[in-house]
Image 1 (cartoon, one colour):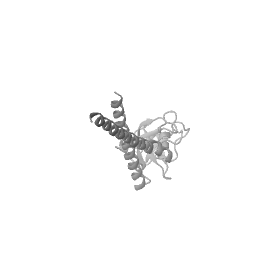
Image 2 (image 1 turned 90 degrees about the horizontal axis):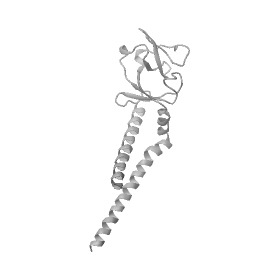
Image 3 (image 1 turned 180 degrees about the vertical axis):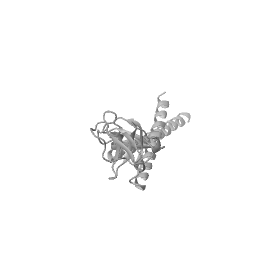
Image 4 (image 1 turned 30 degrees about the vertical axis):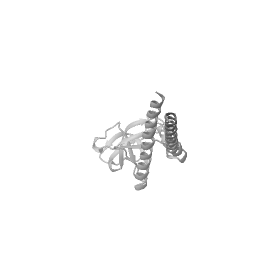
Length: 180
């Protein structure tokens, strides 16, 4: 039973390490290719919220997954992520839809945003909110986080593989010694 459990754990560890490496390589490649464009995974763009302007629904440190949206389908009440003229990325609720763009307002703000969100600058609508996951994403993207979540599991995988092969070799050697 213990060997089966170890094999299953090794399989999941291997899949996790490989997925992490592919994810990091893909996001690094996309970020370097076009630093102004947010990496997209299956049409969803992960972003970390930096302020509490959308509290209580979205707090600083939350991660949001933004799905690309057709601007004609955006309506009052939708939570929109867009880029301002100053190239800042903002996530606020649509207060009003106008022919010139979207009037937005943070749920925790007293006034509407001074600048309209132009349809061309819309990144998408918020599809999912992952509480506090932005902190984890920030940690993983740091050197320490990369070491802890990618290199350490990879080294652990290598050590376990080496241990299993040495154990198998010693067991086979012991069995052949008993036969002779």
